Image (tube, rainbow, N blue to C red; front, side, top):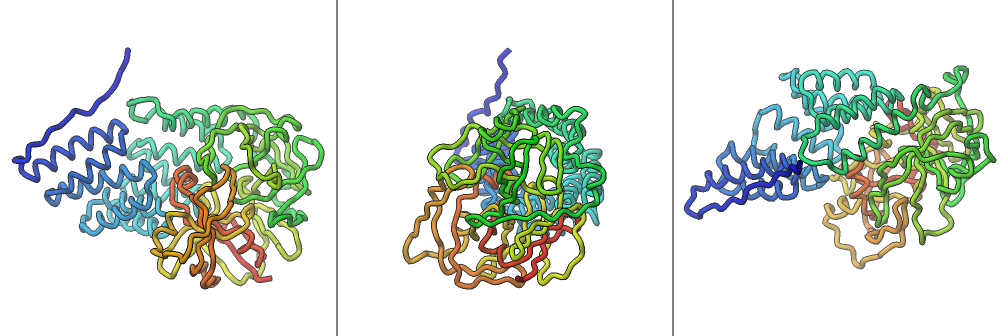
Length: 492
């Protein structure tokens, strides 16, 4: 049986009262949203604002904001959220929607404050419970985050609640439970049509279940409290260690905190017997944007004294062609293994442990870890943004959307030849005259690289404001502490 849904064609006479026209448009927009036709819905919600009564204006703005979040238009969503907030409604669902837009714009602390305010007067609000659960997990309070997410699901079984729970459980290495949560997510999606997003989630479920009785990211019992000191060398501004995969020959591995998982080239994976299990969705800097790659499992990873078994791995297949041969093929992130990390650029060693040793520091910045590690930076004194801490990156960059919000018109356009994990970024350019601040670290009248980070932002679920790489990090002994939820910098 063929099933389909088509929103009706609506003709509105000019003689129809303005508020009646708004109501018709609102009903049409709701139909389009339910049919997952978000681009059409957002246009219709926008049109419904004209002549709307106050209650209709709230509905139109709320619907427009939900639609913008669905299509990852995070800058427009933030603008609409501020408009919605200016309408002065105390409705807790609209307040939660406002907080959701703040989160999607990378304003994590502001979103958490709103969630707390809502729960203080409406403890049963499931949207705020979900937001708090996600925020607590990003601050390293995993058990507390799961408790909040489960409370949200007990109150209302929305698909996105299950998806967030699955993401957090995976980070806690509870793969079977994560697969159950993601399966519940798929089962609770509106049965409008089979979407690409649900297909990717089904692939993720298959990957998680493929571990069976294997313990993900398992380490020997005698290593669980051990502090590992691993030497590295710097090559082309990359932190490179030597390691073995599946007991094979020693190979170079880039320490890349800007990657969610271990990454291997197809030839390297074949050489050490890492086989693809399912496909996964990846996104990075470059013209390709979103890419379908393969997921596999490394049986054993040995880096110095650190030994880890059953490591999820992305296999770069299909590979990209036409890129420089200077790229390092294989990488891993200690953070993705669930381990806190110190990168000592002066002494060229890396410290990896569940609990980092206490030591003096000069600067401490709050860190959110939501798939990747992020800290807050402020551009030109008034634009707070979330920056990815990327030991695999080379420069300090800001996103194209962040650059557009600054209102700076450079004297001349300086294009750059920049390549990332998804190929050449044809939008990249150099923007001089930018002021950056990270806590007490300041860069005045600085030239930043501008990158198109829309696709990575869409995949992550929030707007990436920029990336801080080697040019920033190499001035410090950098501690990325997952348990405390901080980045600590000690000047060299």
